[in-house]
Image (cartoon, rainbow over all chains, first blue to last red; front, side, top):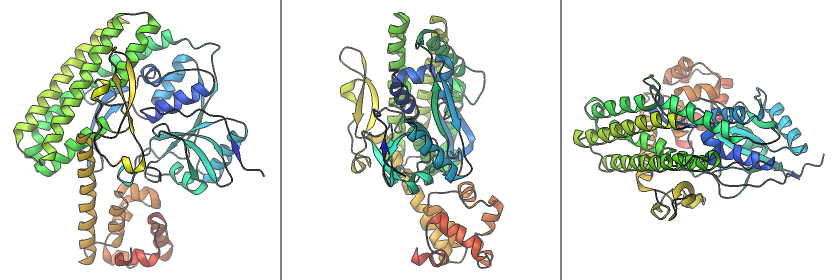
Length: 335
Length: 134
């Protein structure tokens, strides 16, 4: 069998992997949709606090919805159909991937980060919700478009199998996905409104673990950490918040800047000048998140367990929660 | 954040030639993307997280040498895993993996199960039995 094939696929770097895969696959199929547009329509923005689940020995904080949801919601709202497949057998997974490549179809894959050899060691954690596109193969390597990389890369058969069958939470099980049918024309207006309303609802939900309520809960806990956990662990928890907020893929400020970019673009599509102002306000909220991260980092830089510092950043977080609550209540009425 | 304020601090990303993409506004208030080499607050957070792992590895190593735990725990920490992740990789119940941390139980693990652990850690059975060779 002749094993070398390469689909003509345009790689474009994005901040976040899932948005990037969707945006790049859409472009490949003739639809230009920006990363912020995918993120906004897919209602990707969130805040969530899961103190009872530990990752790297610290609670889970997340600034976005769970993996896969952005694409599902985006697809549903713009009328794109997606096919998703998971596998128990790596051989079948490989065969199905090869079959798609032979049919000239680049596919999205969910993979684990720990064995991604092109990432620096320090970034290789057991995190299983990374996304990439495979767009061809040579005799012994797959051609990879990883949206967080500046240019395309490759992985051997064995390397790809390892990341596709990483284990642990969110194990990808070879998860492969690609769009199968498209609307005649992409109508973004209604999709944008739906996307915005959904995010407003999530952020102001009357549930303690999501949205502004979760932010207040974290703020409350931060005050207790130094006494309850000791300086070392409290520092570690703060570090985890900052890492989740500013890690590769967030676009800075816990996805708030990507969301502001979305509101700016949406203002043009919907012909709604108001949204430009909302975009500006979201940028300022993003800046407040950056200040919060900077002040938190001063605490763990000095390995401090003094409660003053903790109280101060708890106040900042509380203030951000107040601003976001007002923001999303207003935004809901503006679309 | 303004485009010209996008931080360009030193980070571990440089050696892998990766740059972080962030969204920022240009002079006209339009959103654009900009590449960043890193930002100190998150670099320190990552360094600290790595340090925590290194301490856990060293602690496990000491306990293996004192015969308080088995090499499996040491290799687990070295692979940045925790109990649920390791159990999922070897395909055993967590409580069983935890039992294998006991030096006395570890000695009695059969060859097939040992091989499973060795495969997950990508080492030989000799290395698995003796951390000085790992």
